[in-house]
Image (cartoon, rainbow, N blue to C red):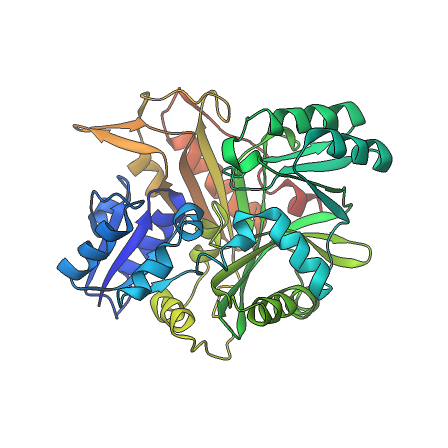
Length: 422
């Protein structure tokens, strides 16, 4: 079959690599793709926001299945419009994608269906939100309700910091995403990411990972889209994974069905594992970035049939076949990220890094200018490695980083520290 993959980041490079290996694939198109995906399929220039253009492309090129990578097209209803036109697509409907598109929507769902999460309130104006903060105290978490590229969450360690965060969000720092604010209690514990494939009525546990959101070593500085990750997350034991499926994933799927908005696609649960078990921090309605790069590096079966089964409502009983090895990825970002990443600097040595044992380099924010590879975004490369342990995967990944010649980039040097410390 002909498949269209939507997106251009490291996540999509990892998805393209898996899809390109499928025995079910005839031709792979990536819109718009990046210099890494061009070796795996055909990059195409397509305005993804123009749903009619996407449908027309699918008809012209006989594409029968579309895999949507990023969240914005899902929240905008691309899957709905494709399926109305008779094109099968992987991902939730516009209504179901509200699980990521509105943090308030998700918190209300949790309250209605007894899904464990932090206590919260929603606000559409600054002063009531500030009064709530003063009442609850600090630390406390302030979130822009809508999509903010992973940066609309402020963990405030003092009341003043929380008040400033409220002013920042309502002041337009995150655009329309900040029209409403969610203020919630600070959760203690260890964070983990858990992914389940869903077909509207059933869920299949996929994999776990741990992300490193803060830009600086030791988990310092502002939140980013993610500076690195590893999989599996040691804290997600089989018993804990079963609890997450039972206490969080299953009631969410049931609740969405009851509401008439069944969820298909991948449900990405950001979790806090505390003394009383798992609590939901937030949902994403798509594969994570950079978690996908490490999870798919461990996948030991054909990805395409799994995604097709999700879209068709025919998920198998499982389990998903994963390597017992550890995968770890280091995000190589442009200097100035996350505030003002510097574009245009030349990157050399990617092929040298990718030739090292166990190492794969995924492109994210790159572009080609003739024979030169240039930085063209914030998170530019994902240097990923597989090893028998976290320590081995980490050593291989940083050997890959060190093989790349890019003075315009930087990375954290402590990815995987929590697992190594444990």
